[in-house]
Image (cartoon, rainbow, N blue to C red; front, side, top):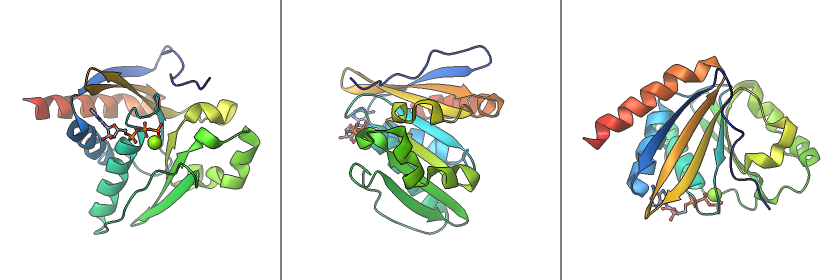
Length: 175
Ligand SMILES: Nc1ncnc2c1ncn2[C@@H]1O[C@H](COP(=O)(O)OP(=O)(O)OP(=O)(O)O)[C@@H](O)[C@H]1O
Ligand SMILES: [Mg+2]
C-alpha cells in the first residue's frame, strides 16, 4: 500500500487548511505558491491517485515559466519520473516517484542536483523514505465532495510566514 499522508505535525511546524472547491481553485493555489518559492525549496505533494498533485505542480511551474515569458506543457512525469524546466535562472524539477521501486534509484534521477539550486516538486514523496529533505513544505490533497482540501504543513521556519500569506491570499480570492 502506498503511503499518501505526510508525517504528523511536529512542534515548530506550521500548518493550515485551504479549501479548493474546484480545479480552478487548485490553479489559484499554484499561482499563489509560485510567487513565494525559489531556489532550494522542496514541496512534497501527498495524496491519493487523482487527488490533484500534478494539477497543483503544473500551476506552480507554468506560473514560474510565464514570469520568464515562457509557455510550456507540463505533462505528468508518470513514466519519465522526472521532468525539468528552466524558469529564467531557476531550474525546476518535477518528480513523480510512484514507480520508483527503491530509494537507491534516486541517485540516477539526479534529485541531489535539484536540491542544490533548484525548486523541487515531488509527487509520491513517501518513495524517498529517509532521503526526503527534512526542510520542506508538505501539501496533502484530499477529496472532499466534488472538490479538494489542501493541508499545508511547513517543516522548518522558512515556511511559516509563507504559509500564512498563502492562506490569506486564498481567503481574499474567496470573497
Ligand atoms: N480542487 C479540485 N476540485 C475538483 N477536481 C480537481 C481539483 N483539483 C484538481 N482536480 C482534478 O483532479 C483530477 C486529477 O488530477 P491530477 O492528475 O492532478 O491528480 P494526481 O494527484 O496527480 O494523480 P496521480 O496520483 O495519478 O498522479 C484532474 O482532472 C483535475 O482537474
Ligand atoms: Mg500526478
